[in-house]
Image (cartoon, rainbow, N blue to C red):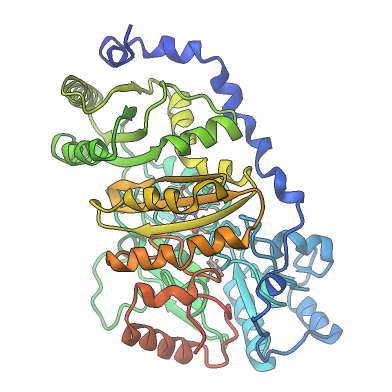
Length: 518
Ligand code: FAD
Ligand code: 2HG
Ligand code: ZN
């Protein structure tokens, strides 16, 4: 039987049973980043032109002062082996040499720490779950790491309004579990949900797979508390949906990448959890078909469409070959995930099935499957969300996260493929096509200057020529700050620098990140 018919005849279950591999593949997370053990070159060595800023160096007396401030076990870390994980980023491409990690539990402790740092001129690197992908979460030199991992209290949840207030160190997945007991969901979801912190999400203005439906954090964050570089606590903890009294200061911290203050609390509007969620995984012949199906999905699925993601064949291949995940359908040049979320199961299923039938009849979709239970849904989402992890198994990953007009979207991948040729292990394109956000990734066995120079600045010029953004959702961090002018005007960057100076005149917060040197 041709697999298109599977959807119609609901024999999808059989296909999944046939794929006995599925469940064991899902549980193969242990395979995750075996290259953790690989020595990561120090950032200051890989980029020898970098100069350490004029910050103070820690003495034993300073460490003792922090120990008095944070009494108890494991709140002041100085042992180099304890610090290794905090100094190295998730991608294993940036590594600092911090000698001190501080773990406050309260806003007041953050304030006391920053007062000392500002007075003595110690540079500080705020860190959440350390899942950032642009080298912003780890020190470049010996900045003190301020980790929010012990600031993990949920303060309140108003189930009627859907407003959650919590500390910045709460893990996104834990927050989602908590609010789901009250029939709510977090307005964002991403592959790193098991370890990223809500404070890190706010600091990067993380996007993820729910942005299409629920918009960006600029809309769903109602209140925020941050500690400024001088230790002052800035209280913008409103829980009101409408509040036009003066400038909306909290917005400045959303996406500020730890450079303007340390986010300590937030109030977030959580949407209602949908009664029914359906997920289809479809194979297509061309990227034009992907765009046509996106257009049709908005028209025909309209209010129930909750995610529209895509992978090219190389992206799926990296999951099947590097993580041994099984694909539920045969090979195709492109794959899409269409998720619907609604309140009426029968209606939603009918609507989706009819839509998929039409797509198959007109030949826009060549093959497909619809998940019939949570396990299958998780497996399909795994194929999309674990591409980043799978790529790391190739060795070194050159990562680009860009916004582009949809008609240009996939041409960047094609142009990059022909440019780097066989010098790279692979060039993949995938991402949040519904948001105009492409993840372009290139891998090689280890960091290779020649490959790097084929990619940059070509990639940034290509994006700027089409008026795209060189960072759609991951931020600029350490890796991309010098390319900010490809997406932002001189006057906009000058205003950013003025704001940074106002909030952090000594430049102690996350130096060498986000904004370019003068
Ligand atoms: P960290 O990595 O610790 O820090 C990120 C930045 O925020 C740093 O500059 C840090 O200094 C700053 N920061 C952290 N906490 C605070 C705080 N309390 N106050 C001030 N500054 C702070 N991003 C997306 O947008 N969409 C995705 O779909 C997505 N998927 C991902 C999937 C995987 C597998 C991985 C590894 C990453 C993904 N990311 C994605 C990237 C990453 O930005 C997010 O994972 C997340 O928002 C980072 O949160 P974190 O707590 O790990 O922050
Ligand atoms: C995703 O959408 C993340 O999976 C990671 O933003 C993207 O690794 C990437 O390029
Ligand atoms: Zn993404």
